[in-house]
Length: 353
Ligand SMILES: C[S@@+](CC[C@H](N)C(=O)[O-])C[C@H]1O[C@@H](n2cnc3c(N)ncnc32)[C@H](O)[C@@H]1O
Image 1 (cartoon, rainbow, N blue to C red):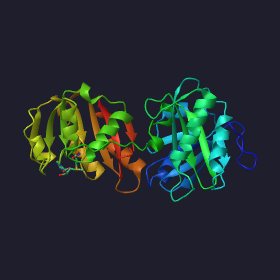
Image 2: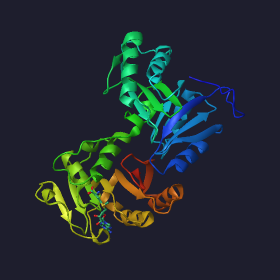
Image 3: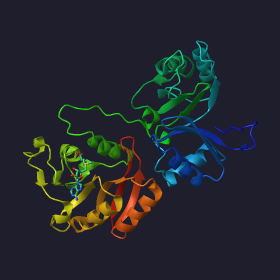
Image 4: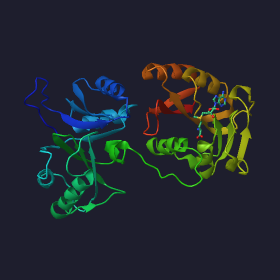
């Protein structure tokens, strides 16, 4: 839904407004990417953590098409802004939000609709995001004949609460880049999980649409203590792990697990023996790329590499270009994204030519 801004010199005649979210500390990179992608844009941070509003001189479809064509690395989540409700910070806010939603022209008849409400860091309205969700759920049933849900939703009503406004929009889960509220993907830690690093690979599977169970034989470089190896074993793959550090004892008896207790620069591997290489080495990115490059003969043509790229020097775009330069022409970059579970790093998917 387009909107115009009458009180600003940067008024957009045809445009759209959004709430964007990236990882804490990545706001400047996320906004730089958006500015490169859209000629006419205004971006401003609306909460620590990092949440920002951006107004673009392009309609919603144009924005989404552009983001599909050139998926950003740092933008983790976005929601359109269709309604801007002024808040008083008192009990009158909930009925006002509900009334605004009741009046919206969304087509939600018999659809499964999730309401995802979040608030700005540090703001303390006298109601919770859950109460906002409940107020909107009531309108969903009585006005839109929709079915409120939290899973397998067909539409999402997203609400971001600043101290002064509720920014509300309705969209499809794919259009938000993530079906999780704010793109904050939460996995339950199971008994026996070896490391939280496993969550990175689980999130990569979702974010990049990878089906790890379709691979047969994986090489895990820099594998200890073994979160990634254990996840790939759970998906049914055979795994060869390389690390001079010890692997978790629970892996050692697994019939499909081989452990090479070595530095990756010292191993000899059979040509084309793997269809997947994963690498989560905590190393300077160009040295990591050099080391992985030297093992690429072991990857079959068309094989996939999933690697983290540490952001050590505060220049993520240059770092990624340098890593690409080392990998090319052997590997082509398919996707790069800062996942919710990435800290000072990106996760990349590469394909062997
Ligand atoms: C962040 S940890 C990996 C965590 C792992 N993905 C998991 O899920 O448990 C990085 C690992 O890289 C290993 N590493 C660093 N340099 C290496 C090298 N040259 N060869 C092999 N492993 C290396 C370290 O020993 C460390 O265990």
